[in-house]
Length: 319
Image 1 (cartoon, rainbow, N blue to C red):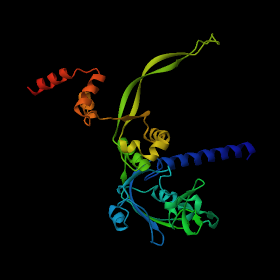
Image 2: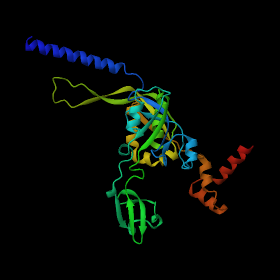
Image 3: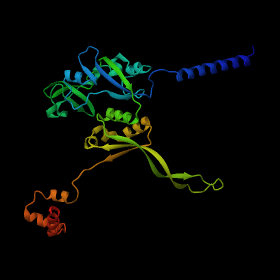
Image 4: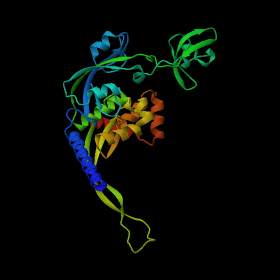
């Protein structure tokens, strides 16, 4: 057999292997990366001493964490996006809705190994007086830690995560796959912000400027644009005061919005802020509620409003 024939056979074998790999990927069964799934789970440290996280309200109540303003219910995540521990994600991929599992997550993957060098002695003057006690969470020179001991003017601050060095036992149940895109978006917002805002998806017609192909003969032509009406799929989001003041939203709304666009497949996200008011004279009169009679007359004069006309209108409305 010549070298050319051997090379041709090897190439054919590679093609067959590649086709088999592609077919295997197409025939992959169960949940895969990119799928939205609804999970119910509870995670404890491997020794069972400390609750790490849960979606179960009964577990939260038993552990005394149900009063922290968090809603305990199943959560929606996207496989392959790092929304849960990698070991748990690997266990879920290939599974089916309704499956359950228990996974031990190593300390290294969970919250890191414990590093003695991350325990430092600092001056108590760097710590607010109200936080000078063992167990207090503090921030020193931009690092988050907690006080392990404090004696006199010195404090030992541990900058390790409180669960560093702990393996985590993670029990989960796959409640189902989430196909509805509005529910997918709501689940992501709840994961990012700890709250589920009101949202909906619509297709809008939008005018935008698009470039015009230049004349091939005119190399020095200035770029030209024309207005074109295009359809854009839009996720509308109602911004409540609770959401507007949410720290995660204030610090990362651009990143969160981009992730929603990428993972839900919409063209844009529009955040709508609704301000309810009394409107008209109700608002003005409400603002004058604390004034005396003389003050009201002066205020009406300053506002160039005829008080007699207002009285006549009110009397007419009563009739």
